[in-house]
Length: 419
Image (cartoon, rainbow, N blue to C red; front, side, top):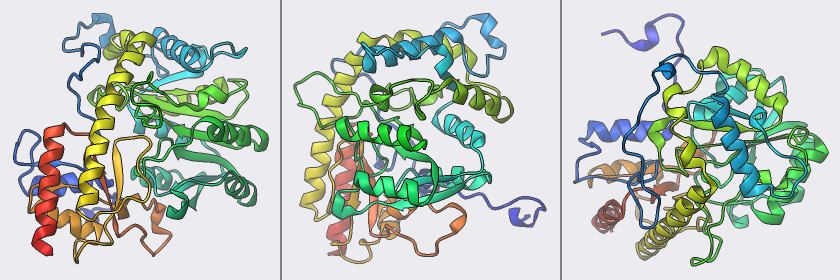
């Protein structure tokens, strides 16, 4: 058998953290329909109906004309529907409003981010640590820009003081920032006045903020019995075509339709034009038949109803997971204000479980999957030799409650076996 590295012209392409752990788990017998396993590493939410949520789409009718290629930027009615949603949720009473020309549709979040990366020029782009594992290859493949890591301190609950962010932008000459908000994996959130000041920084110092807002519906800072809270930097943009603020979201997380692979980029028309050019050679456009089926999902009343149900359900799961982890001696320096992840500190566990990779491998013996924290040390091209976050794991409360109970029972057995 040929070793792939002996074939000329190809480089070694690493798997992202979640893909790596799933590959290892499948080799040990994991399957999605195997009731003996609990996937606490999954990066997707449960997809079934929730109490109080609108009915789920279970059947599609396809317009035969949509078997053709769709527009690179997506169907105009869907683009306008996305613009209308942002104007309704975040921009009531504001002079500057989004239109379809401020929206581009893509085949999922990674594709949308890849289009943006391909459209960037020869600049310095900042990103936080820890952050989303898939950013690593995204920041490695495109050579026009240089990625600059900005380390977040657990003593500050993985938040960055505004003055520190300003110094990073000015001192390193950053022309763009790539940020997940809420953050995967820490679950930390910039909202309200803090997020407004971020947008002001972008505007004043002409640094494009590319905000991955895929978890913007998973917010736990509001009152449990109050109206749902959604967070987006769109609320603080003054001029939609002048402020260098670009937002990426889609059906994957907030709407709990990960398999549909429909996402959108919202930003200045100039940016949308450039990402469309990138999409023309990168991916050729999003799934055309599905785009017309998305429209009802983006009605504001439907979005608010579904978000209310999601937040209530996932808040309950978050609280359950945190309580169980604390009882097992697993630390959490900053409880998640958003997302469906817990950034778990394993340092107080007995060896070898105090190492995220060893914790993951040992968990496979108990049919439970987690993601080692080291994968969130976004390190393009391995420019740094020291690996951070070895003592951490990302534990997802995306799965159904029964899977959470099964997985946490397995972790409890695992710790007892090593104590």
